[in-house]
Amino acid sequence: MLVTLYNDGEIYSFSDRAGLLYIRDLGNLDTSKFPISSEEIEIGSRRFRTRRSTLNDVSSSIERGPQIVLPKDAISISYDLDLPFVPRMLEIGGGAGGFSILAALMYKIKIVSYELDEDYFQLMKRNIKRFDVEGLIEANNKDGREANFDEYESIFIDNPEPWNFLDVKLTGTKKIASTLPTYSQAERFSRFLINKGFLVSVHELIDVPIKLSAMGMRPETSFLYHTGFIVSGVGVNLNG
Image (cartoon, rainbow, N blue to C red):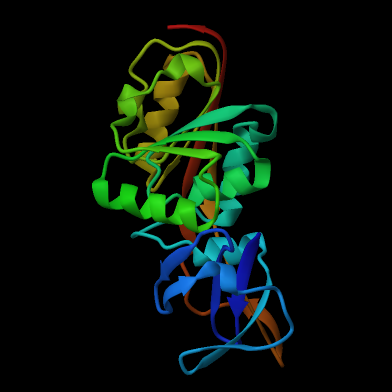
């Protein structure tokens, strides 16, 4: 079971089967020692309550590197890849495991993830253990170009140059999605997929947080408006 420790300013989520686990800002915890209860728990000088984790708890608790796929974007990507209807998917650029962990928990599908960077790979493995999805996510510390693309219908690529991984013969039906930060990258990948016979769609990722005050509602005064693009494509009866 996924458990969340929380108070007015902090949230920490983890599996109660993760064993002894180091959690940033909390230290080493025996994750089996936190039953769901209305009673407060003291850790150092701080006090917490426990609850069953939500997806939002998990997303906010994933230990991350410089960037991570946001929950709203993960849902859009999953929709484009038909994740509820495929037995497994390929991920290239697993990073800290943010997308694969949320997708595994939401859709209970098998995910084979490739992450070449050793530091990110180790971080992803820790997160996979923390949220008890080792049976659903297979993490590989390898170049994504080593994957056998014929084995997968749905492919997610989190890399600024996704075309480098798809310069191979693609056959059958393929659903591909990638997150890209700039217009030029999104356009280049869109044209690349079109040239391979894909029907392509592009969506800009926009996040506008709203502030509620005694005077009413308005956008926050400082926020990141544009967060990137999702480029997705569907190819049917591919042969090249």
